Image (spheres, rainbow, N blue to C red):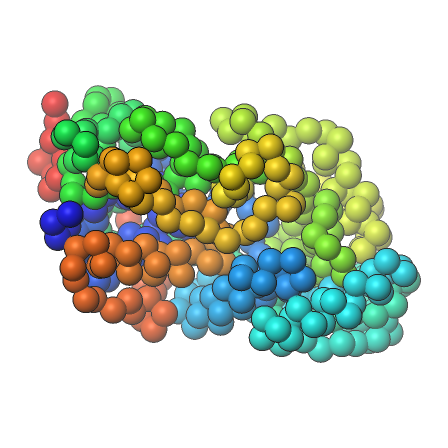
Length: 402
C-alpha cells in the first residue's frame, strides 16, 4: 500500500472520533462520515462509566489493565468531560463476600488501586446504600459525559484539519480492482448521493460494523449485545456503586448529572434500529438496583433506553457477558484479499483513545511512516468548540458529486 494522504473513517462515536483525532494529530488528512450526529449511536446511550477496570479484574485481565491505564489518561486530557466520583463494590451476602478475595487479587494484578472498608464506613460514605452491606472496596471509577467526550475528540480532530460529515449514510463502497478507494454516501442534508474518495477506509461503525463491512462484500465477527438502562429522576449516590460479584444484570448504579443510571441487562440481538427496550428488563433493573440502593423503588423514573455493544466473538451465539470487552483491528487485505480497508470493533468508550492509537500505529506501519502517537499527552480541545457543518459546500476535498 502506498503512503496514505486521505483516510475516511465511518462512524462518529467514541471509537471513530478517537481514531480521527489520532490520525489528524499525526498529520493525515481525515474525513469522518456519520449517518446521524456525533455520539448518536451506542456511545450516546451507554452508562457513562469511566472504568477503573474493577468490573473486569477477575475474568478479563486485558480489559481491566486497559481501562485502568486509559482512566488515568482521560482524566488528564479531557477537561470538562470527566467527573472523578470514585467507585464502590459492595457485598450484601455470603456469595458477594466469597467473591472478595478473587476481586482483590485481580485488582492487584491489574494495578488497580483499592481500599477495603467496613460496612459501617460504606454507609457513612453512601447513606442510601442498603444497610445490610457487610464490606466494600473502593476503586477509582469515574463518570464521563458521553456527548462531551465524543465532541472533544471531534473538535480536536477538526483543529488538526479533519472534516466531520454528519447525516451521511454509507450506502456502498468504491472499489478499484481489489482495493477500496472510497465510499458512496447518501447525504441527507443535500438530499443526494455523493462519493467520498480516499486512500484508506476505516470501518468504526460499532454494532453496525458487520452491516457496513457486508457492503464491501466482507464480514467481521461482531456480536451486537444489547442492554437496557434506566435513569432515575434524582442522583441517589455520590460514587459509582457496583455489586461485589461477577458482572450481571442490574448490578451497577452510576451518578450522571442529576440522574442515576441503573444498568444493565445483556442479550444478543440483530435488531439495531432501534434496539428494543423490553418492559420486563426495565422492571428487572429497578428490582436489582434496589437491592443495592433501596431508595430506587421510591424514586421517579426519568427514562429507560437501550443500546447495543459491538463485541467481537468468533461464536455469534455466545452469551454477551462471557465475551471479552477487548477490541480487534481487522485488516481486510490480509483477511479477505480486499485492500484499502480496516474494521475496528469491540472495546469500550473508556478505551477509545488507545483504540485510536493502535489504529494510528497500524496505519503508520502500513504506510512506512514513523510518527509517534501524542494523544496521551496533548490536552484535547474543549467539547464546545466542535462545529457541525450545517451548510454543505459542493467543492470539498475528497468529495465529488456524481
